[in-house]
Figure 1 (cartoon, one colour):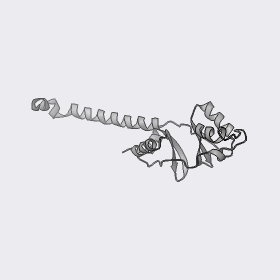
Figure 2 (cartoon, one colour):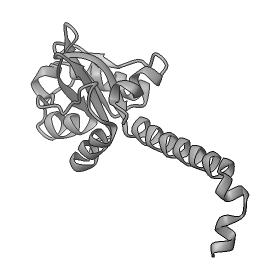
Figure 3 (tube, rainbow, N blue to C red):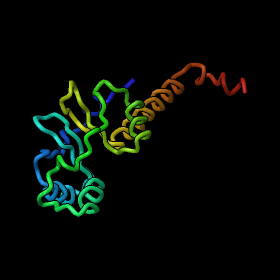
Length: 156
């Protein structure tokens, strides 16, 4: 059984992009565009406060006629952010992502932000685990005296 902590341990020091809730929306959207990402985690003192996405910008700034250079991130961010614990099983993490149609989940340990896992991270881990099991089973079968003796080919 594998856990989110296994993914975090295997990842090279990946950067987690965050922004303060007191920054302007313009600063956030400019950074999102520069880094070619879809959203930023909003943190204060390494505690997750929410997220700000391109969708938040479109729906809560542009459509409402607000100005991105004067509107603060905290005014439009999504407050209720899904997250997982490092102790969460990878399959449960994937289920949470699929059920909620999210591609990234912050990882919190005692309310402190310790990482971020993407759907890509989860899928790679699951596929690697499956490949490992297949390799081990293939080695087992190839080394088994019953297979070497032709027992199974004689039975069939």
